[in-house]
Length: 96
Image 1 (cartoon, rainbow, N blue to C red):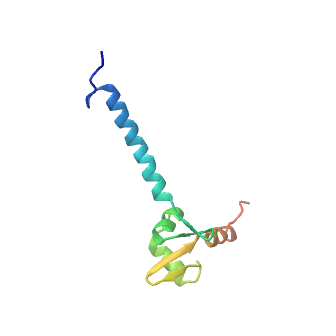
Image 2 (cartoon, rainbow, N blue to C red):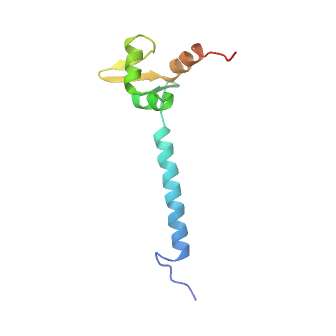
Image 3 (cartoon, rainbow, N blue to C red):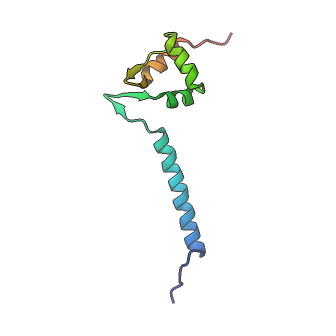
């Protein structure tokens, strides 16, 4: 005979745990997803500050001082990933 599957049955519990894990992984992927434009990727203030572990205010100070290249379209600020990588490499200091 067939067993009736309910919400509390082990099979159903395992299924819902797996769905929750997959959902969490998809959410992480969508947070880091950044579509490209002509092969170039652009980041917002929020994304760049999170990656560099600095505040948005610090990014603004870098822009004002001309230390960091950016694009401004209306009120939106974008940073080209390639420019940021080059800036980081240029400012890299070797250990003694």
